[in-house]
Image: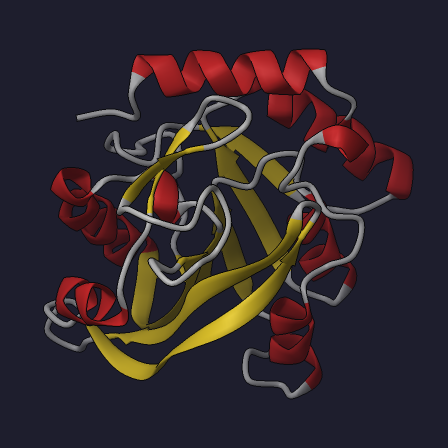
Length: 218
């Protein structure tokens, strides 16, 4: 199973037709959650990978904080922008075109910390277990994983239903905390799962924050 072809086409169109500052999820400021992980030394400089990195703003942030940072996305157009921005800003990081629901053989390395920011709501329940196994495979023993995705309690996009269409015509799946707990437990120890508010260009989103550690037997 791979990310749906229609989603890839939609994302390519978005990254080709909209200026980066008009893309709804491409925020100028790095989210407080990611900054706090660095500031509190919850995760210290290490090898980090972002899955679904888009134009790579957060990958560049980690690179400037002493991390060995890699970003993965299935959109060639997004990564063209990511590489251009990294070069312009002098950020030493790498970007790899790969489908997170594929086997990701393009990613040859393993990492101490993996995260996805507003990616999991693009991955529907039948594909999530496969995705989590891929994340686990990329992590070194005891590695950490952070996922932040939209909650079913989110008032945005008409605020009802598990599946909701966005103004950009993409379809998202809105999760519950219990769903996320059941999804991650076979592979990860749960450090913390909670409901949080995160900033978006169209308003505040209610999201599920999951901070996890790879199980020794996974």
